[in-house]
Image 1: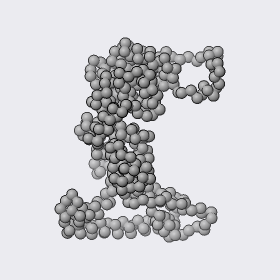
Image 2: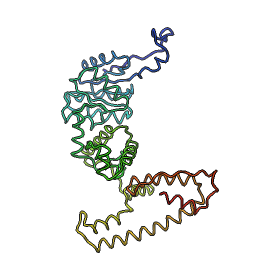
Image 3: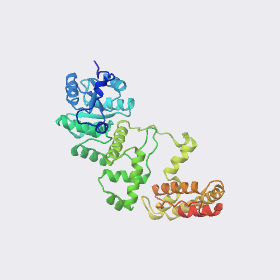
Image 4: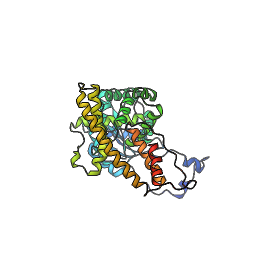
Length: 382
């Protein structure tokens, strides 16, 4: 039987009065109500946990469940902010983790906290691998659970130091080679993946900069871009995002459904190739054969690939230069500088050097430039 919260009716006029000594400003500053769905392995356990949580005025229990089926039904019907799930359900070990995975697909905006019998490594990794945003050991207090719910509701991750140590240790042992979305599209550049690996090792920005031969400022910019691409806001969330991908890839040895380049739409295919630095492949091969890096030194092969790289670069340069000259006649200076800024960011992310963002000229204070002058100005900064 599914137990839902009572339907709320419009309060009578007298109930709109404020408490003694409380102003309307005080009322508006009160913490938001957190809507919670509780699912423990037994009906009694679920009800007792719900009763304890409801003593907090900022928590509203919208559903009390004791099985996988009614939990999934209640999620859709009540749309809670957070669902508390027992790791074991329906008298099946780890059934709660299966529910967590299914529930994320049903209600992506809901966050999940998994109840653990202990903070054993396997339990912690299983919960975060299933997509939980928090893990909570039953040995801890109700007051600590309330704090856990507040933290998770604010968009953060809840785990104690031992539990987070398990995650970092496991991630370092088997980090995913790349982070992808549901379609298999690689989300981060090679350098951004390097930054992620350094963070999972616990390195500071200064240590990351020293290892990767970057400035600390550049490392910070990389991290902000990584947060934006992954939709996270802290290092811990980023590590857990990466770990959940590693776990899902392990569960499905095929990983995300990968589409061959030939099957992709033309625009997506070239975007993928650009992000993978395919244009630099001949030059990189030439350097590897010349230096004997991960292969035997081979001067003739190195020379051949340098010839290929030189021919490709000259042809690309000629085509690009002609196109830029033509396009500067069609777009204004502000659009050129916007494109210049985006190009500089892309080049920095893909290890083509670091370029300061240009100062956009004020066309009202200067005479309109010719196409050749605008092109020269934009190219000199990129």
